[in-house]
Image (cartoon, rainbow, N blue to C red; front, side, top):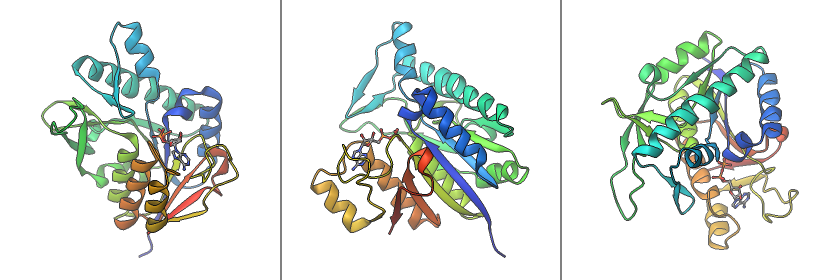
Length: 256
Ligand code: ADP
């Protein structure tokens, strides 16, 4: 039997932070026909609110260290403020959105990352995704809005990278749906030249990716994003695109 088409859109931190970009993304998302899921990052709101509470943020290689105070902040900000504002904005656009962390319906189980060279604190690596819990909602025309938080099954929430949540949800849902996963961020796609929005690489294969990383053309948060994209493709996700919200027909397509 042919699978139903499902769009999974991930919206990045910089877009979430900027209300004009976020509105444009939500307008485009609301217009997408058929079944859909939105996954959002956190942005700098957590850093700002933490600082208002007198809690300092520590970043190592661009990644947040989540100590117990920061876990409380990200739970409030990602699971509350950011998630619920997006849900309300989608409701205003006629979309029946439902905001979830990985603990809700127990849909995404993770394990606290073991302490290695760096101790990232309360960060969860995804172990298991319950696609059926999400599929029931999707089949009911409910639009899940996934916050970047998971749980360990022992009563603890964990901070989890939103690109990883998007890729893991896409992989699990690909068993049931014909999934297109789109990572939306503030640029038109993977660029050959960071200063030239027109230098989008239309198709990116693994060999090219490794070459671009070696040459420093692809760097920072873009590397784990593309790694997640390749994993998703290998696990049955039909199409993975990296693009800007107003460029959903364009951008970079990731091909194994
Ligand atoms: P998100 O906005 O989804 O949270 P990240 O900030 O983790 O994503 O990663 C996106 C960032 O990657 C971009 O803001 C950009 O600065 C950086 N980047 C590095 N190399 C490239 C590239 N070749 N093309 C586009 N962006 C790139």
